[in-house]
Length: 101
Image 1 (cartoon, helix red, strand yellow):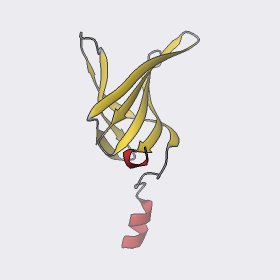
Image 2 (tube, rainbow, N blue to C red):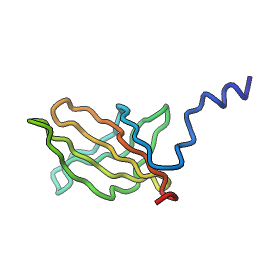
Image 3 (cartoon, one colour):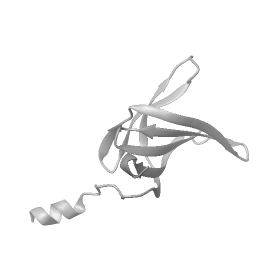
Image 4 (tube, helix red, strand yellow):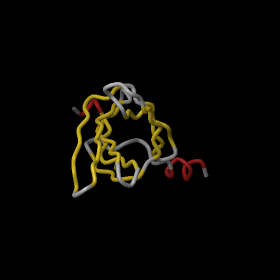
């Protein structure tokens, strides 16, 4: 029975960069400084990942929709989080363990 429960756990993460494309709930800070929108932590696969550092941020456009991308690290993994400014949704697009970089 215990082994069955362990196999249901979606962790550990893949050993190399993996496209994910999962919708996630993100705790976000909005402020008036240069970084107007900043993810702080997010819930993915029933776990909360606290973001320690935003390593890069950029925007893309898809027609009239702007998406804000964030390369975010929790100290162990690098995540690409994308905020769709039209739908007001977050998506986790990629995961890369930092020890694989």
